[in-house]
Length: 79
Image (cartoon, rainbow, N blue to C red):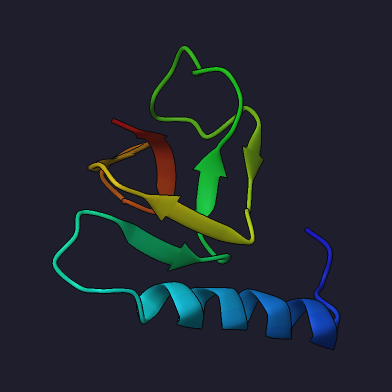
């Protein structure tokens, strides 16, 4: 992962702030860019994190998150 520029960090923070201000009570959530997401195929062993993962700038979802394992530190899918 490459470090942010000040401008990139400001843009990401502003996006999260705008989405956070949206009306409450809906099902959708926004998470900041520091959360890992599996963006490749499912590995054969759920206890390993080998595979393609990324740190998106922003995650917006309107369903229940499914985590890679019990540590809940990697988002496996949205469903």
